[in-house]
Amino acid sequence: MVKTILVTGATGTVGRDVTKLLSKKGATVRAGVRDQAKARPQFDDDIALATFDFENEASFAGALGGVTKIFLLPPLLPNQVELTNAFVDAAKRAGVRRIVKLSAIGVDNEIQFTVGKWHAANEQHIRESGLAFTFLRPNSFMQNFITYFPPRDGSIYLPWGNGTASFVDTRNVASVAADVLTSDGHEEKIYTLTGPAALGIADVARILSDATGREFKYVDVPEGAARDGMLQAGVPKWQVEALMELHAINKQSRWSAVTADIEKITGAPPTDFAQFARDHAEKFRAS
Image 1 (spheres, rainbow, N blue to C red):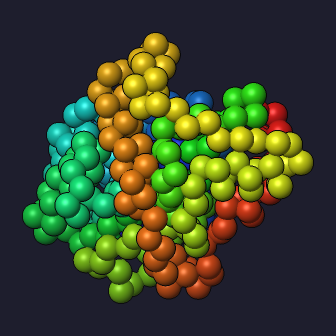
Image 2 (image 1 turned 180 degrees about the horizontal axis):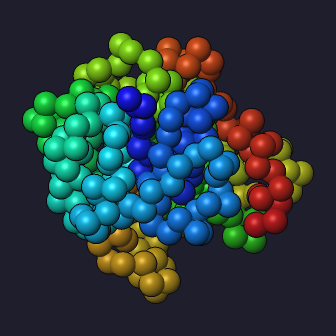
């Protein structure tokens, strides 16, 4: 029987790379997507697509047929815990044997934050399911400076003060996931994935300036102004509050530690921010 790996969140930044890396490794991979017609151009023809939506339990059975392993990227929704746990239950009923879950840094320490509580609840449910598991807990993504808080008119606006974080490249996260899904010895393991150095936002601005030849600066935004700006931009209140919790943690440099887990698993050191900036220089020059 062909052993298929299902990738959820397959059209996202991490999931897309996981899918492609698994295919390159010769794995039989199935990308779970909401709209197959829209997703098809993103993948080679040898990658199967399945209609899948965490908010539609009727889509679970078709996506899970013949699947033995899952890359689980939970949806960022207020009911993440319920949706993800229901999917885990369905996966177990379908005969899935192993889940590699993308979680978040800091979910098991004393810092309480909303998204962390959701991930912790999902992790606990997976543990209790009896399925083999591996939890990947990445730090903030370098790619967030492209997708979530890109520079505007040469400035990066964030309420981080002088806080630092060991930002990680999503390409490294995807490499770890693909290696873990295609090799043994990772069951019941937890990996914390970070970049090679802790950086403040002023450091990020300087590195982007060096990589692009364009001057960038950091504007430390008051927390109240950051919250109001997101609300005025139409960001849902629950998401604004969750983001502000993360910003507050980073302002305190709570997630500045560096781990060796990426190199331990992939055999290659994590990408530093300078390399990330060079690789994406055109995007930043246009911002």
